[in-house]
Amino acid sequence: MISVQSEDFSLEQEYQKLRTEAGDAGAIVTFTGIVRKLYDGSGDTSGTAETDTLYLEHYPGMTETSLANIVSAAEKKWALLAVRVIHRVGELKPKEQIVFVGTASGHRQDAFDAAQFIMDFLKSRAPFWKKQSAGKDSHWVDARVSDAEALARWQDS
Image (cartoon, rainbow, N blue to C red):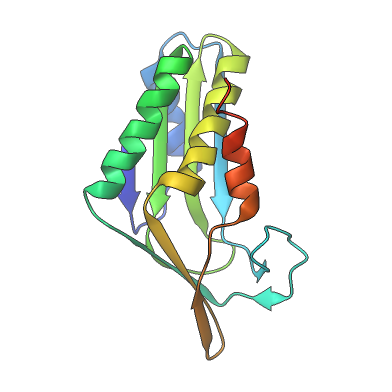
C-alpha cells in the first residue's frame, strides 16, 4: 500500500497493518525518516544550516505511480509478503516524521534488502521537491551525490 499524505502516521498502526497483511512473515523491516534540524545538503548531521521548515511538493498521480513502480521492482527482486510506503507532503518541522517504508518477507535478508532498495530509489527517483526554510532564507534542496551513489549498488544486482 502506498500513501502520499500531509497528515502524520502512527508507527504502531502501520506496523500492525503490515504484520496483518503479511500473514506468516518471518521478518518485518521498517524505516522511518525524520526531518532534521541541522542540514548541510550532504547528509552530514553536523551541518550548520538550521531548518525551521521543510516544504515538500509532489505531482499528484505521477508521484504515486513512481512509488508503485519502485515497489513493483522490489517485489520482482525479493520474495515480499507485504510492503507499505508513506511519504508526507506539505510543511513539516524538525523532528516530524517524513517517510515510512515497511517490508515483510519470510526471511530477514529479503526484508532488509527490499526496504533499503525502496528507500534508495525513493530518494533519487520519486518526484518530490523539497524547500528548506530557515529564518528569512529559503532554498530548494538539490539532489545529493550520496543518494546517486546509493542507487549505483543496485545496478548490478
